[in-house]
Image 1: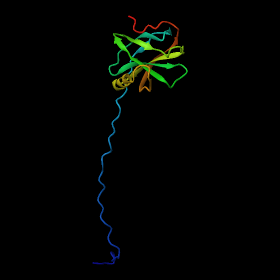
Image 2 (image 1 turned 120 degrees about the horizontal axis):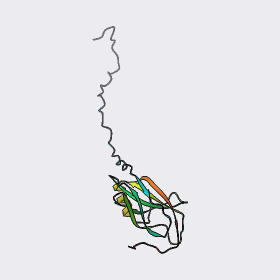
Image 3 (image 1 turned 30 degrees about the horizontal axis):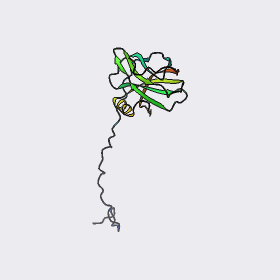
Image 4 (image 1 turned 120 degrees about the vertical axis):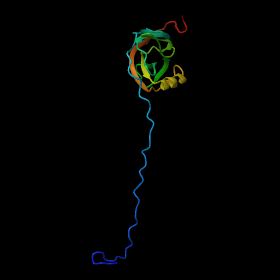
Length: 156
């Protein structure tokens, strides 16, 4: 029926459209948060042979690990994984840590990093002395200079 208010048209009626179906936002898996901060310090080193044991004070993290990384003082990009530290009460130690290559006197820096357990495991698979990127938070750093001296690695 046509009326003056609704004149006939030659155009077909627009198709009815459905309301768009809302889809859930894609979920992304976020990496675990970094371990909580801990009190940590490296005992002053100064001069060191190519390989030695290192110690310090600190609280063991409730999650993750603390790792020692060596880098040349003049090279802020190449870092070398050395060891996961071992806690004994409020002290820690890392045995048989190599600083630089034979004949290289540095100067070097020993860096302590708080990392997740996953990151510590990844670094451990690279092996000591390998160039690495570190996903964590730096806790302390100490300058060291290599001296020509008998290595103490493996000594009791």
